[in-house]
Image (cartoon, rainbow, N blue to C red; front, top):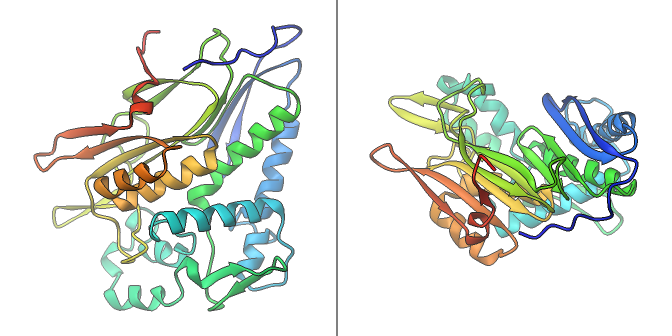
Length: 324
């Protein structure tokens, strides 16, 4: 994949800013003449004031409490992209699922207490079709109990927001990583496309094992990975995934272990990685055929317990020798 190297290097070097945001690590590398960490932290704070449902005075928290609030561009962008992915995925991506997710509990700690009656009662006010934005830019709910949680798309959009900040400064070479979401532009300090590892599925619920499945040479694209192999619960010999199926209210049970999506922006990659996990292998491939702007890498489990891989031709072309 050809990469534009931009203007020749002058008085800049590669900076590396790191920290914690949204309960995960961030790592940002970029070629510039000074550190921008102060501006980066300020951008994260503004983002949280819009879309952090755990911040009491955020816009999304006020929407959830049905309080009058003026929606900002961050909220509107995420909401509209969520509507688009919800529609394209046949409802398998849904940002109103938080009451059902909370019922199952973190790490499925409530698995033994969830009943069909509980799920049925919660589904009465779950569904993205129950909330919209009117022509005046106001939230409209068909049921006041509808709650929003944009965690399946927000980290990807945060990557885009930071990328926009860097580009506003004229930066042509950068890598933004927030959790498993990535935005890459230009070249790394070795003068080649950024090297990105996709992890091999390993039963590792605490997330400390990172064995390489493939390594990519990524420039001028964004990437997001969603996986069931780190977050699951086993009951009566069945493995229940951390991805909740919006159509049933229960954890998805399909053969997908990991989905990696490459797109022009990270918000899109993040949302479709989640949608594909709920769709399963065959329906994900069908959706991808309708969205040629997406590249995908799907790791799936066979009946005999072995792993298989299905990927797009465009994704295959980005795979590089790990030693390069």
